[in-house]
Image (cartoon, rainbow, N blue to C red):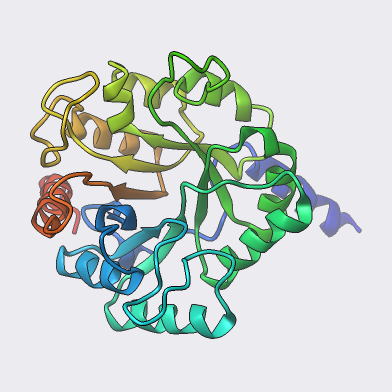
Length: 288
C-alpha cells in the first residue's frame, strides 16, 4: 500500500509539467527538435504522397490533418473512419520512408465521450504523441480521455476573428488560463505564423504559455498582418531563431510542424529549407 501511495504521489507531481505522453524519440529529431511537416502543406496530394514529400524534404516526423485522402487509389479520409487495415497500411508506408506520425489536427473533438473516444482510439493506433484542436467547449471530455489514453492535446490558434467575439483561442492568455488548472496532457498547439497575422510577438506569447506548449505550427512571413504570404523559415519577421531559443529554454519536447501555405504543387524545397534552418540552428549548438 505504501508503494502504491508513493507511486500515486509521483504521478500527481509529474502532472505539474506539460506533456506526459510517451515522448518523441531522439532519433526522430533534427537539431534537437522533432521538426517535420504538417501534411496540410501537401493538401493537393494524398497522405501517402505527403509522407513521401516530407521524407524528400528531410523530415523525420509528420502531422496529419483530417480528411486528406489516404492514397491515390484509396479515397478514405485520414481520421477515425479508417479501418485497422488502412491504418496498418499507412504505418507501413511511414516506416518505409522513415517518417514518424506524431500529431493529428486541427480537428474537432466532440463533447460526447463515445464520439470523442473514436478519435483517441485512432490516435492510439497510429501511436501519436498529440492531437491538435480548437474544441474548447469539449475540454472536460478531452481532459478525461487525454489522461486515459496518455495522449497530449494542444489547443490551436487561428488568427483573431473580429466579427466573432466568441472565438478566443487566438489569445495566448486565453489558452493559458484555459489549461492552467487542467491535467498536464492539455496545453497549447501554438501557430506562430497566425500570431504574426495578428501582429503578436511569437516569443512573448510562448513565454505566456510557458510549461504548457504541446506542439507548434511554424511558418514565416515577410511582414506582420493579414494578407502576408509564407516565406522560408528564418527569412521573415516571426523570429524563428528566437522561437527555437525559447523552446529550448523551456525544455520543449513536442513536435514542430512546418505548414507552408503557398506554392502548393511544389513546396518541398521550402519545407526542406525550413528543416535545414533548424538543422543549422542545432549544429551551431553541437546538436545533430
